[in-house]
Length: 289
Length: 289
Image (cartoon, rainbow over all chains, first blue to last red; front, side, top):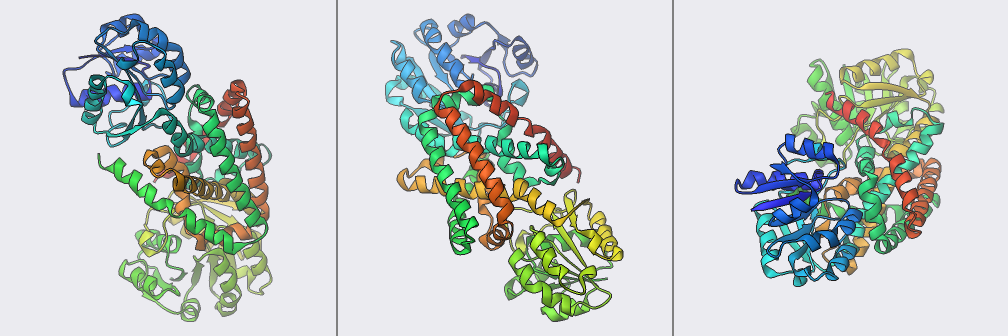
């Protein structure tokens, strides 16, 4: 089987590397508008060959769009036009509703399967890719009832071989859930970074005192704008609601601190500690592989 | 030298374990009002013996208060009264101004040295202690001009043997800086946990979709209320200012998203990415040991 990966960064590269460890019968064609990235991906063994978009899509049995979500929207109609009758198309974008709505308008919609792997790091580019990124993680399949069963099965098979756990959601549910459990985390991490960097302008050595707790909450602020600006924009309605709830929670906690209401402060933290069971689940998935 | 550790949890236990790896001539006496913790600390080899507070303090050359910051305020006057003339007292509390102000009122103030190790995990109790917690991390010394030089030197020596990097601040500067680079991170992590747990009441499986990015930002929400409620309360003035700035940054970002101002969104993230240099410094310190 020939697989064309469009976008040779963290996700596309890791998807290819992970599969190459499991199977030797796959031929990977890499497409990247950044020539240096394409060359580097070839050197690193992420793909077997590089091609331009037309050649890649028309030669492959499966095309995987692993580019930022605004680029997915830009490429999708053209790639679907070029898609051979027997081929399958998927994308790994972090938003799904706008992408699925666009795909729905194309006559080849049944050949498309909407995916989102719950995996990533704050790094990007071909150098950031590694075979262990996806094994053990969740792959969300969206709106599968609109895809050919054979196309869904092909991707279920590949994701299972990759050691991923499959979940099924409608694209609106996906975007609403992800606003809370992923996109919100990124905004609050960026805002934390901006707050302390502003403060650093007045207090030169403040960040010398930062430790692992700060590092943990601010880590996502390393994530690239090219990826996250379009995610926030495509999921703006859900994210706005989630951010509104979060700001309200913070303001409530600030009031509790200002009023020295230590009893309520204790109750809020005791309730927040319940996140331990969620984190235990994430760690269990991560260490299973 | 006899060292009395009051509070046999993560910090007190790790301080003792770390020093025991470097030196064999230290005798550790453990004090904990929780009898089961004291017994467990003895079994785990954190200390050589257990004692009640009076015996521990009066027998030791150095007493280390490693309890929550409200308990430090509660114990400090009594422990200073009992402190032998040759002995040194320190504490490892995460706030310093209120504790130093209280110590300033005692005639034995010169025998006290105010410390704060920038190290920790979200876990607590004697089982959470490990020898590698403090090596490589920063130990902040506060208001050292109010301490006997010999007392400061004793602790500088021990912390250096532990592999820590020493920093010196006034207690007001300490609390102002830590509000931004530690206490704020904890509040925002608790608020994130509360926001998604509330949402989970409506959307049962939402947290199945959480990945490592969410885990990173919410990890500190596992931290115990017994430790953090009094820190927030003692540092409420600085924390309130930091939280106010942070909420303002979030609200600004929410407006940018709502207005679909992707140009400003890109600029904010590009600026936030500058946190990479800070994180590189923290990682460098952590991996040096």
